[in-house]
Image 1 (cartoon, rainbow, N blue to C red):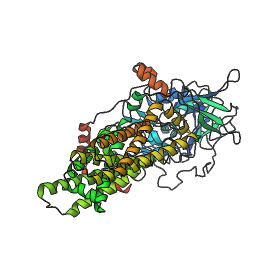
Image 2: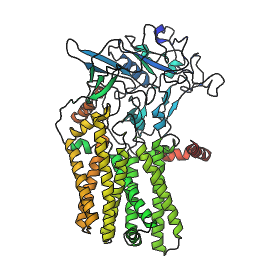
Image 3: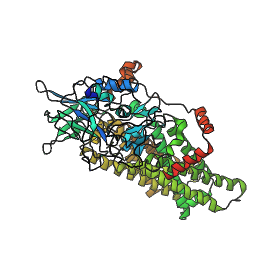
Image 4: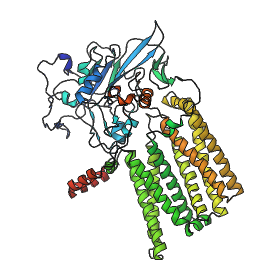
Length: 633
């Protein structure tokens, strides 16, 4: 248990003699009443099984930030990092600001932000490893970095950038509300260190002495309807109608005169000049996701066309499955799937802990995607094995066995494909949170899946005119579906009052030429696919050119999909929480200096020894219990 000093000042001690019963979101503040099964449990902090005597132990606590008093001294950051022994590139609490006006009417509004320990924590729901727990004690959302395998999905879904993915350790850490201090009646370290009484802490909805407001929004703070954050604000000083960010994000905040709220608006910081930036585009840390999604969607589309087309008696498809191109196509699909899964796994911070991705099937779309894709891979592998067995052992196995694996594969493709889409419908990332994501993923499956089959058929000299038309028509449908989704996406983004409008701005400027190159390739590929479907052509060069155009459009488009997303994070500063400075530090070598707070992104090795040690040290009963917990949630 944390040791409180004898001379702790009063401002560092919790003091909530009374509190509300219901918060502003209509939820009870008390998380566990007397007699509840979760009442009277120890938090086992550092192995200490004692229980804190705080009378408000089971009530939701939260931070209170008085923007009128914050002077941006960063004492809260320093205290937090010192207590948690954070390296220079990790900060659970950070201070940013927005500014508006010109001298002498210049105004600056500082914002100190950490985890808000939300009523509906999307980090907990999204985490596939179940590393997060929402405790009844103080309502704290606590994360266990030892369980985390470093996928970083919680950093995607959190609207406030609270979870911090450490590129060095390959795991996520975050603010734990200083529950060890709360247990002995002390406020969190950041609050105790605040010089200007800008930060306070207590039972949520309680207004500290000397304050009059308990607002849920201030300029620059993301929308609250996603997670119902437990933080309240005071800001009595008036601000300019427009408050701009000083980091590289092309956003400012415009005041709505009707209700006084501030909403995101475009701030074109670097003009409207189009650029290429192909190095940044194709050198993203998310390249593993590009390889995974494109390969898996391609194979899912091809497999569905082969199995369903054969079952429905399409003559051209049946000719393909009965011919010499069938087995090479299956082996190619199996290899592509294996490569995609390998790339995704090695993208993890702890790739040897891949099995933990199944731990949260009840809540996490990532766990469900992993389960679906794994089921698809098993179905494809079984289907391919029995197809090979029939060739080698002269049809000794009944065809129904192969059909069963085909059904398993299709079920896996349906589940995996759906949750591959759902995991990107993130309200905190407006650029992704649009139906065009589904149109793009489905379009890729149709276009690249059909063209994969066309190339294998060409290589095996088995591309009949009928099959060529069918595959070209399918590719055309996929390309058209993707194009329609992109048109509506662009139209909707330009009218949004969200970070999505800044993403569209970056798309047409920073990556303007790749954006239009992708659009052009997509249009030409669609025109060529339609002409082949209508006129017919068995020319190898026609299909090769069509495939290269569609593949290039897909790779560029998927790269844009990942690099352009702008989350609903808090404003940064010139050097801290500034994506532009991070890129500059890595390019210039400043990241070699620890005091810059920037490190290079990196990939982590698969530690087979640690995996084998875990297998050896885990008893059979515990293994069975883990499987049971995975299945039952």
